[in-house]
Image (cartoon, rainbow, N blue to C red):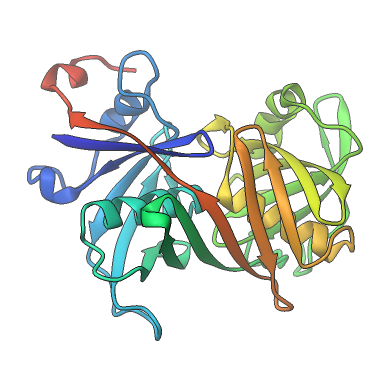
Amino acid sequence: MRFYKYHALGNDYIVLDPSDFPDWKEPSAAQIRVICHRNFGIGSDGILWGPLPSGPPAKGAAQSFGLRIFNPDASEAEKSGNGARIFARFLWDRKFAKASVFDIETPGGAVRADVREDGRLIVTDMGRVSFSSDKIPVKGPSREVVNEKIEVGDRAFTFCAATIGNPHCVIVLPEISPELARKYGPLIEVNPLFPNRTNVQFLRVIDRANIQIEIWERGAGNTLASGTSASASAGVARLLGLTGPEVTVHMPGGSLGIQIGDDYSIRMTGTVNRVAEGSMHSELFEVKV
């Protein structure tokens, strides 16, 4: 039962290759929860299950690899920017990738990975940010969800909603903090306005080339970094006229470079670090969490 652990700006994932688990169709909810647990398991912000069968690569890529992403609460994420970069590094390290440019297919859409600096730096084409309530989804009539009101707990916020294959709620404020994300993030995540729950970002504009975000991730909680959160936040900042087409997104775990196209396509540049690899013992799964 081999595992491979990486982090991208402190957002850590465990990669499990299905070929190492011939008796598993996929990890069960109980297995996911204990593997990700910081005390009873290895500890991570999620599990990357792949490579899986996929369709042919799009033009410009030599190969395509399938990927599924599981949160620590055992829910499945449609897409992960940091997870995609980590998986790209894993494919490169294990020599599954025969060229430096390849596609990763996720339930939330394909990601084009460009491996640089022998895997230490990955550039990913994340797809397009959409603000459509039907695509995110957000309840109510079909519309672009921009500068709407939401009340949670003892406070009201103005938010924009977006998707880049998974849902996001972005709130622009003059000051933000981890405590703010921890207090209101879990309330917004499960607000009935978002049928599939939502990721939450609290955003502060530093200048037209720099923004800062605090993150509450659906199914994972307060994380140090998130690639899709950075992508959605940069898209919202651009839509609101707060930044230009190139922006650095600062998070507690580090920074990502984001390029925003005229069609709100996102190109993300960020690092990946290898942490460990080893074998899980069967005793790990005797504990229920």
